[in-house]
Length: 111
Length: 109
Image (cartoon, rainbow over all chains, first blue to last red; front, side, top):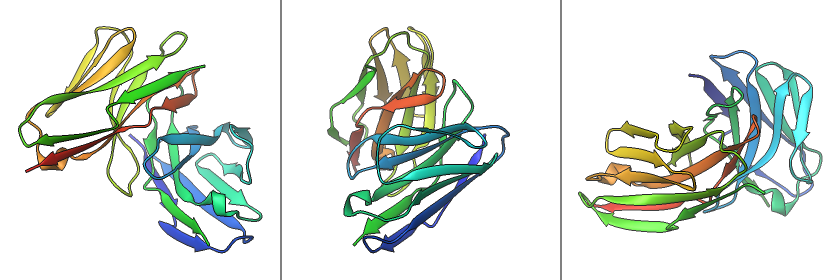
């Protein structure tokens, strides 16, 4: 199986500040990579996914963007955070058609 | 549109009291159904994958089954450490998972 690393674990940022969350994967090559957001007590909402370097698919229009500069690196960014960007952000990786493995998550609070 | 509905939203059981969680799905051609366990403040942990109706998978006190319209996660003689939120998801296309809202399970000692 693969291991997903995410950091930081928690983050408190003021409204209007930039954001950069990083995710790296070990244990597999050419994985699909995913960013999800989870609101309190809710299911997972897919934000972005990538099937290869430089290839990003956006699932919902929002204040966020994603990039994949290397095969095993996935970055979630924002130029200016909104209060509504608060939530639990999860990175996941997996091969096509099979299970995804999740990282430990980042709790983002925008104040 | 593919949809996944889990019930109940929350379930409280006594230790040793067996029960089942339900995951109903609407998808055009099921390619895979996945069960995850999520502890508070942590990422989901993969449990099972089911691909075809009639398939069953087991792990310790958990058993997942699949029909053409729904999946069940059976919990036999649960212990307090089984308390968690259990998430169900279906594969959409070859790349994406569509998740249900989860069932929050609490096992009282």
